[in-house]
Amino acid sequence: MLRPAPAPGREAGGALGSGSSVGGAPGSAAPFARDLTLVALAKAAVSALVLALGFRAVSDDDFARVVIAQAWAHAPRLDPTGTSWLPAPFWLNGAIFRVLGPVFAPTLEVARAVAFALGVVSAVLVYISARWITGDRRAALAGALVAGAFPWSACLGVATVPELPTAALSLFAVASLVTPPGGPAPPAGRALLGALALVLATLSRYEPWPVAVAFAAMALLAAARLGQGRAAQAKLALAALVALAGPAAWIAWNRVAHGEALNFLARVASYRSAVTPGGDGSLLRLLAYPAAMVREEPELFLTPIAIALVAWHARRGAAGGEDERAPRPPFPPLLRAALPYALPGAVAAFQIAALSIALVRDGAPTHHPERATLLALLLLALAVGDLTARAFRGASTGARLALGGALLVVLFVGIFFRPHLRREHFNPRTDEVAIGRAAAELTPPAAPVLVEVVDYGHLAALAALGRPGSAHPDRSIDPRDPPVRSSFDDPASLARRAADVGAAYLIGRVGPPVTAFAGPPLATRGAWGLWAAPAPPTSGAPPAAPEDRAAIPAPSAEAAP
Image (tube, rainbow, N blue to C red; front, side):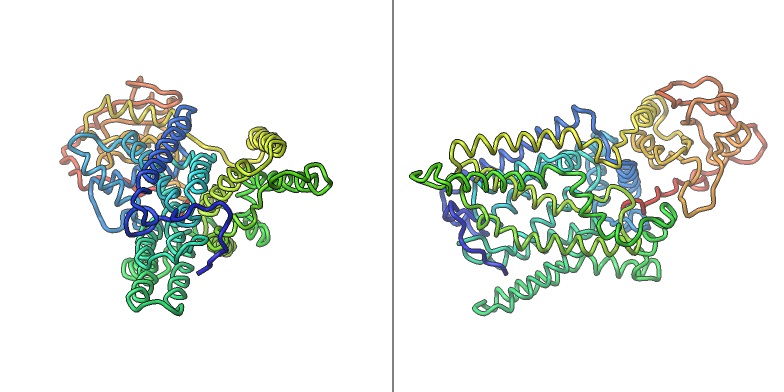
């Protein structure tokens, strides 16, 4: 494991150990608890601000995940989707839905409350990771506050997708193997905690899989290091095995359930090929993830450049005789303070390289690639917060003013250019959510509802409706399937489809075909409406039993593996 040289200004005993509370010092538990509380409250405040500004979802995947978790709560099964999506987030959210079922229905609001709480937990994990990496309380606190507030971290802290908790767990795992500057090697038992975190992470998203490989290699190298006791070596070797348990279990499951160990890769590749036939060239794909990081979070990359420029100017001025008798240099040395981030940064770079290769082979997310780089962005945010705080503490008055001005320029550049740099935008699906909520209020809980599928926005209506056992999408729009015309396009097709599923109510866009079939809507929300379906003509045939009716087709789960 990497053992950087001690950095100036480090607090003795500041690393979080696995014995007492923090660094083994009895009096350090209270500051650690205060810092954790501050980080949690700051993250909660950022999340509340994001919601107040109107953010609700990154993409339709957010709603798809809620729908699948609702279905799992309704009828649990080991593999919630039977597709390429990993199961752990659905187990967690579905279990919460089931536990809260007697008090709260499994609504979109409950899912968003769970996401809010997981965002706060993620911030706490990031802070603990920063303590393990730096061994410095103030450095970890400054970095964790920045890591909880940069835009993608802020948005993913309230979105119903698992990227932020997954990245926080990955960071926690990598940090568990880092030796802080001037501190002892981390206890071997800590590596077991990191390995368990990776089990959760690798069963939630695919991007931690390269991290698990790197973790296992580092744990085995640490076990082979001279001077380790047998107990420590056994724990590190066990941690290496546990870290790979998630990918191994998923591969084995695919072999058993689908007859092909790497079935999930084939599904992801086929979906991406169907969505983006041809795609970009190999070079553009190799550079897609680094480019997405810079494009989406320019401030995190411009801030170190600004610090370096101010430091260069301050030292150049001092060398020129402007402040020769100053009791301290005009700008503190920061290069050594950045060394603790080298090992985690190398793991993050390995992860991005692996993801880039997967992208070339069509085995990567089809949109918002920056989500998969969140581990690297969190690490960069920790370093930026740490080094910025250290620069302000150690710089002369003039250098502080220059640094403050430079950071204001960075902030202005980010605010002004960010809307022009972003390629993809967030989609709250306000009308679809509103009509789903209206249907939940105005229709009986067990009444079958037929939902028009225009695009993947129907998932927002299904999530807001919260009835996985009685909602029926109109058709499949999976790009790998043959195109199917919507039954809402003409009254006769709509009547047949409604009879097929025994629909008592309809949700769709307001238009002549549906009004010709069902009359005026019971409620409208934007372009969407809710109707009571006319009773089908009696034909003497017995009504279809509920289990014979069309079930909800699983949302396409390859859009963001």
